[in-house]
Length: 443
Image (tube, rainbow, N blue to C red; front, side):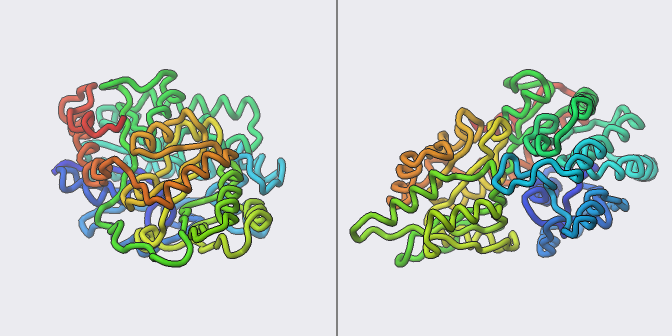
């Protein structure tokens, strides 16, 4: 059994999407010959907690913790709020606000992110721990991208230790950086730090193929010697598609996640309104929102739709998500309507697929997400495309589900691919991804 050190910020009791990828991979890596040691913060100001996720941490998983100080939490206290994962990052949203001193400080002083004060103490701590307890490989997962700079410090101390930099989202060209009103110097610093990480890492892993463009300056190639696409996937053990939705009452569309400015879909709200206005026996449509909704979008929903056509359900624990999805007749996925949206694939896309429900999808076209959902047999349209949404709603009414087999995206399958990558680096240092990884790639 080889050992891998995983440097992560999000870890139970953290909730939300950021924790799922490596919580689940650590669950299945031991089945493939790799014992994880996870390094996480102690005292992190997580914006969302879900203590029930602790049940997914195997008793055999070693967790090292390092005390963290987070300036973002101080800034939020100064304005009388609570810590927020994406401070000021509505990404072109309806929430307004403009340039504030807090956003400027967050973006131009704390680089690469507000966890930067965790970097140097963590490097010192891990150098001591690794001298006492060696490992065979290191994985850093970001955002926050401070984790990659911790791994860079470890790599400098142990140059022969294989390192994989796992990018769940892009870095220097991520959309929310625009909301921090970065100076040219700050943007250049982000890019320089990003390139130091990319150059020093033995391999980078992306969760959407086009994310490699900004990191490498070129597209992801077949059998790429530097980059690999390993998507997020879903955990079959969570139990998707366990119940059937109600056969009477409204047709329920479920949205799961954060709905903010660049994810606003006016065309969908109008298409739902038009559907419900049709005469005849057709079942009306009701949209349920699980997670957070930008106040501006909530106001827009109130103007377009009657109260009976939509409902805020708030955030729910992740172990309640599969059943909530199963009780929906269709699932809504709206991705950031900008360049970042073209290079990112929402983690919930694969849980949606596992739920075996019709999908309504919108966002930036000519994107990784559009190509993926088309390969699953679904359509995708722009945010204002009322006709496109109307066609998708008709597919929900008809119960049209995916043509793709979701099993290729199971977390245990993808963890096996990750273990194969780590083994190839730890043993032979081969620049070619192993066959198990190549076969797991979707087209």
